[in-house]
Length: 128
Image 1 (cartoon, rainbow, N blue to C red):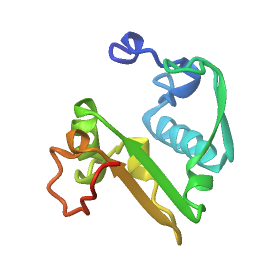
Image 2: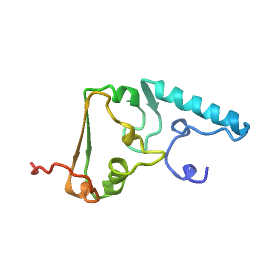
Image 3: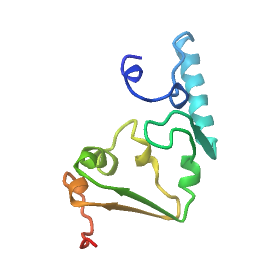
Image 4: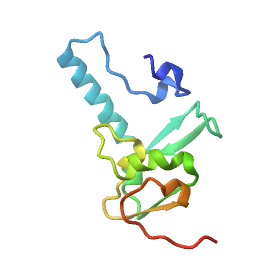
């Protein structure tokens, strides 16, 4: 409550644990909510902090079924989050870390500033 109330994230994009249920029921209820969220093909975004504020987005099952997935990230402001996504093994990873195509290819296009904290090997290409 303290963290999310300060962030520009609409309630519709937050899956919460019901604190009014006994702990066993709360865990099952939360697991069910997560399963339902993963089964959606598309999801609405009604209050995005970035334009457009209202849009429809594909969900993880759709993305992970793709033949090719490409992420593009630029700027030093992305360096720390890219390290978390690409190198850290977090218990609750960021959504981009969950994009792992079952049979397709995943490509990341980063500029040097965005890649500056990475320690994993990567191909470096010249700029256009």
